Length: 233
Image (tube, rainbow, N blue to C red):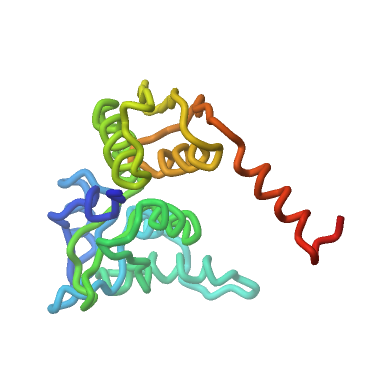
């Protein structure tokens, strides 16, 4: 089965800045390209950090205030106050940048964004060089796949290739990403497997499993377990 990864949805042409890029130039770059953050790279294209609009806004937040260090100030507040006086990307960037790789599955990338509370991930190769960037919006693009493409993947990748089931045995319909499976297979395990594998197809929003089966092999397995000489029954 084909599993979609970050490579399938990332932006390849990445706008970047260097550590010595001035504050004003960074602000102009974000505005010009309509983006909310930019990776900071070195001469070898290794990602050193990332500068976001939020990092730049600290200068506005603390404008006119005395640069006095306060007692009992949180680390986050100290960082914000420090960035308010920043003049280059080196002073402003959040580091280390949370990155991912092209082969990362979309689900793993989404979990990483959620865990690290970030909206985008620079994508790097095996040597740590930037090759792309992926945003939350990019991850959602998978749900814009045409229904017919999804139906074809379920029929060919799930039924025929993964399960060795003739697609003619199962009617697959897709409406707005919701897949409905109708038909009759040999046993209950196969019907449940078909539904689980269908859920992993890129763009599937939900699965309505209306598959029937000839016999319930799960009951057979349960009876065999209880009939085992070492079972408690």
